[in-house]
Length: 242
Image 1: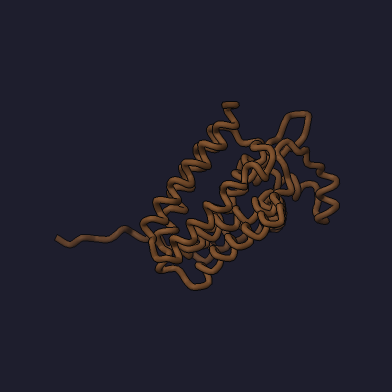
Image 2: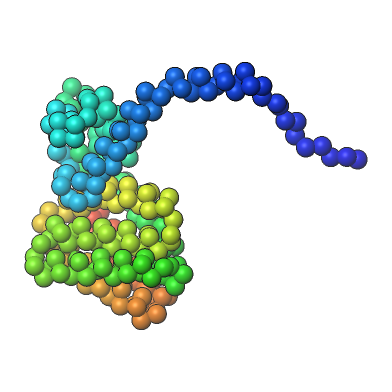
């Protein structure tokens, strides 16, 4: 018995031209969407840096003027960030930076345990540059804490966890974690005084790095699990008013 593969349909030149002509019709939308994605990247980075706080109302006129983009492009960027749970549109009121809730935080930590835990396991396989990025982020946090620049400590902490993900060497994971951490940065703001919140995590980051540099990877992986448990419970307790 002869097994036959799936039948292949031959596309004529005319048919190919039909779909290409149809595709070209959406070129204007693609250019606008591409610009909107870049605008979304800029606004997301401002969330990661701690410049945009939960509850802040975003002015289309002010942001569009600052970035030099049209209102339609800005609205598309807002739509993208709303899909990422960073913004929320309130009918007749406008667009606001979103405040994550208990369910958001719990889900974020599920994702972080899987992604960062798996990435940390690749410490030995990672490039020297990737490992140094982890060290640089820890040192930046220690220096900022010494100067009591607590918002900068929060930014260094975000960079630390981005660097852990970077150990995996996956651009897709890097992109996903950037979005997860932007959402988490918003949750951090509900903790109130940043010095009170971040103070405990600076030595935890330093201790985790010490285990990695001492080639004690299993202990470092266990430390990261405990780290996430402490951080998640810390944030959820505040959200629940405990």
